[in-house]
Length: 442
Image (cartoon, rainbow, N blue to C red):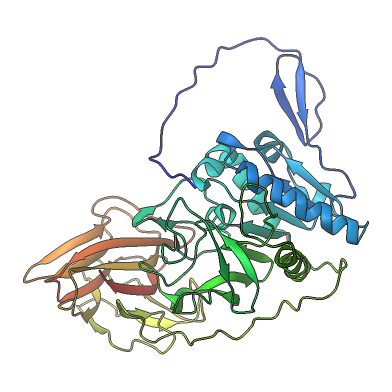
């Protein structure tokens, strides 16, 4: 999985006269005199994004998915699947309406950056609309990173514009204790299965908190401490850090045929669970298996993690404006979040707490935030104190009106002793919202 800086490209388009022809809703002009038509058949239940190289799917990852679905089709002839290119993903619109038998979008491993670049805004919109309409999603390794809105990779934080955001939790990798990138290794899961790990994401490693996990941890890594998730299921979204679809001696070594067959039965059960299907073979129970060791609390390096599920807790609310409160109106995750609504013009309200990074070289502060209807005179800010208050982020004179939560992360110096969130807004419709605040010592 190669990650690199975002690039900008400009395309000059010459105006030409064209003959207007009737076009299917799922067709677009693909080139001179030709149309790209969606290849999904009416009996297709699973579509697999399969464009390799700069499309972002690894050659082996595409082959492994083909092996798995061909194996599954051999067990149950009712399984029908179709590979799609990036152009197909952009052309195939209204997936739940146009293809009512379609159950799941499958995103294999490879390069998450290239996948989101190749699929672009149109591909992202079509996949997101499919999920919003009740479709299921399965992402393996890079496909799991693509499902997030942001992630950490090898100590660097990335927010790419066309990441799907279907799993609204910051992910991170690679797990060097299992296989330093760009290597891979056969690893053991908490349910006893042996699978290939090749740089996939987890939660709770170095820059994220296991407390931010959404959904069920179906299996964890047994070869390292911390019971870090290896398989996550959240409703119709299935994410695997390991390659349960990997095929022995196809780009990798060390995977036994018996392990691969056990992984295939397990993956089939997981996919059935997420997609709401019941294809054969039965067998592997997709319920979570007990982890060999409990998750430590607090995790080493974690100064605190607070989703406000138990109220304001260790925070202090101060300032002249209407105070921050905890409510259940629209949390980022869990059942509660903190928010300040209409604190008042020129009357800020603060949500503040003391911190101690003396045992670390510094820290990383992460949080989900949403800013509703803020305009020039309003303000949302995040600050730390080391004798003087310093801005981490501030709207200033800019406006902000976020439809969804955004995950933010900032580094803090060792000498930082307090943090606070600031909100100042004058209209009843204006509000600042915060959830899933995590401080890690680094």
